[in-house]
Image 1 (cartoon, rainbow, N blue to C red):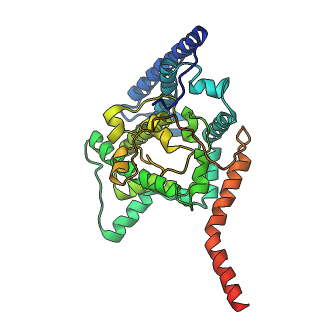
Image 2 (image 1 turned 135 degrees about the vertical axis):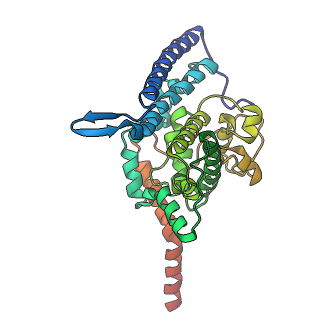
Length: 346
C-alpha cells in the first residue's frame, strides 16, 4: 500500500527538488550552528543588562532554546519529503504551486498561530479553560491528598521518558474525547483538510476544550523539571508535524508499537466513517491496549470529512460555524428537557 499516489516526476522536478533540498539543508546547518552558540552562551547562568533590566540568561535559556530548536523541525521534514517523494508530492509544492484551497487554509491558519492570534482566541473561546495551569493543579492535588509525585531529581533522560509516557496516555484519551459527538464539531476542523501537509498539525480549532488534558494533566500528575517538559514537548511537536507529512512511511516495528507513523495517521483521517476510527495515539501501544489499532488497508485512502468547508485563506466562517455547532450540542439536552416540561404542562 502507498498512502500517497506515486509522483509523476520529470527531470526538471528532480532538479528543483534537489535545489530546494540543498537550500533547506543549508538553512538547517546554519540554524543548527545558531543552536550550538546559544547552548554555549547559556551553559552557565549569566546576566545581561538591557534598558536598565537585568536578564538572567541561566533562567531564561530553556524556552529560548526550545523556540530555536523548533525552527529546525519543519525544514528538516520538508527536506526529507523533497528527497524521498520529490517536488510534485511535497508539502512545499502543495503550499506554493500545486495545492488546493485546503492547503491555503493550512497556510493561513499556520500564520495566525505564529502571530499569536490563535492563542488569544483559545483563551477567549474556551472561557478561560485553556488557562488552567498544570502546576496549579499539581499544587492543589498535593494540598488535597498530601501526595507529591515528583521525579524532578531523576536524570533528565528518565524524566523525559516517564513524562512522554504519561503525556501520550493523556493525549490518547483527549483525542478519543475529540471524536465523541459532543466535541467532534471542534475537532472536525482539523480533519477537514483534504490533503496531507506538514503544517496540517497546527490546524486545530482554537476552542478545543479537551486540550487541557494534555496541557495540564501530565504536569498535574507528576512534577518534572522544565527541561524535561520542553524536551518531551519538542519531541511530540516534531512527531505531530511528521505524521502529517507527505512521507509514505510506517516506521516498521517502532511504528507498530512506539511511534505513530504518517501512513497510519493518514488512516486515522480517513473520510469513510463506515469503519471504526483507529490510530488515535502518538504512541501505538495505547491503541493496541484499548482496541483502536487497525492494520493497513490494501488501497489508498481518501481523507477529509463529509461536512462542507469553504477552505481558502478566509478561515473565520468555518471556525465560527463549528464553534456555534459545538455550543448547540451542549445546549441540546437542556432544550429537549425544557420542551418536555412545557409539553407536560400544556
